[in-house]
Image (cartoon, rainbow, N blue to C red; front, side):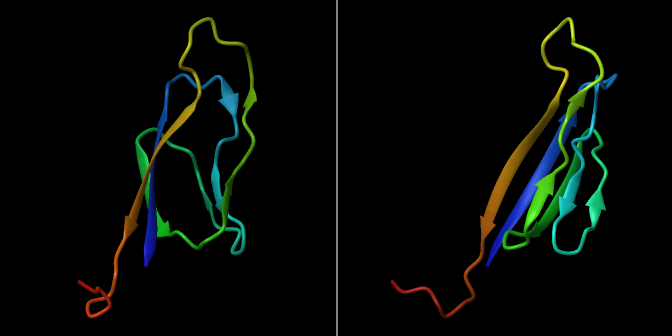
Amino acid sequence: YAWTMLIWFVKEPRLFNGGDFEFTDSKLKVKLKHNRAIFFPSMFEHRVTRLKMKTEPKEVGYGRYSITHFYISVPSGNIRD
């Protein structure tokens, strides 16, 4: 089985709208929040809503960042030496 974990980071104050996470089949939405994580089966289709800048930042780093982890588990008895 394959799992995905996403961790989101946002520099405040936000200079953009959007960036929320959505499972496309169920339409379940997860609001973008700084330092939020989500863990789900990798086979679930998903997307992120488009970012639209409210104003151009004067410094770098005013965006949406994510760290992605993938986890694989193999049921016991299915591993060959």
